[in-house]
Image (cartoon, rainbow, N blue to C red):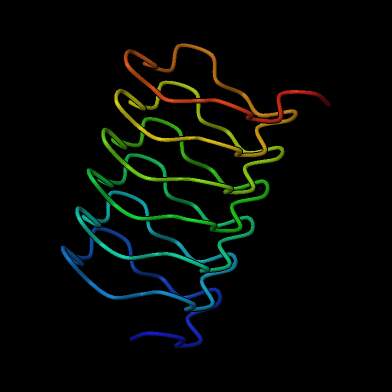
Length: 128
């Protein structure tokens, strides 16, 4: 599904473990409770996508476009989000333990009650 146009698609609770979605257009897609563990979402536009309660363990989101995405409660432990744009995203309650957010843009991002134990965040942009 690499570079597929899935903009606005309803993929709620879909099992996409290990899927290659690199470059796929997932803008405004509904991925609530989807299992994307170990999936490749690199270079995928996910603007305003709903990934609430999705499983993204060890997923690659470098450098994904996640501006204003809903990632509430997402399980993203060990995910790679190097240079990802998370501006205005909702990561409240998300598990980002051991995630790599190096050089990510997290300006105006809601990270309330997010788990950040062991998260790597050098040079991340945290300014609004």
